[in-house]
Image 1 (cartoon, rainbow, N blue to C red):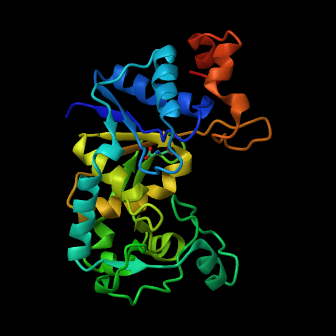
Image 2: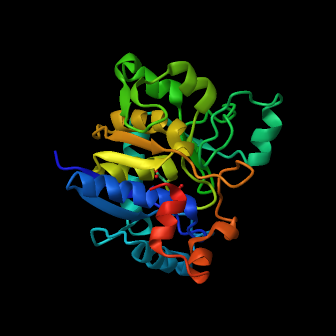
Length: 284
Ligand code: GLU
């Protein structure tokens, strides 16, 4: 099968060195295999997305020497695809409406959640307050959550796995039921603030629709893989390889974030750095 990978930034801030590493890693892997490199713009969070960030993504990546297949898939143009996938999961009886705010969830979770996997967009294991609610009770401002225990009951979880090709966790990983139920929990599939499908569903659907054979992204998303593989099985989508690369950290060892403007590629460019300088800085 022809190799296809992708870089999937959200245009909510300037690209930094970590993004450059991710894009170049995917691009180089595609080049080395005679495959395709795709760019996908993850712009469903309309409150945080800015057109100027999207324009800067194209500009920075061009400057870096990265080339991609066009047209670029912009998630905001495909909301009907995500809604249809969500409807399938709802029809399978695996979803419920949730009216809890972050503050409600914090209040319900009395003890600090040790060892919890911090996945976008939740960040906390949901305590299940609304799990008893039927979908018929849904109000337009409710989020939709996946009932993870119900989902696991429809499949044989011992047969679910994924293959990791990244250097830090290379190998075959079986899905862990305790991890999914206790550390990941009932993830949000559609958000209450924007009504649109949330991260996991969009990513899983797009990777399948775009024929991605290997997902290239940072180790910060390694823990998102189990839930995404589960969604692939529920929706009968192909299961790609995963390549989670090392994270680029600042001098204090902290992972770079979009607010770290000091590491923005545009700053390096303005200071006269060349794409080769960036590759050297990243050890590529
Ligand atoms: N849009 C996500 C981000 O910017 C990446 C999603 C992915 O690579 O799976 O962090």
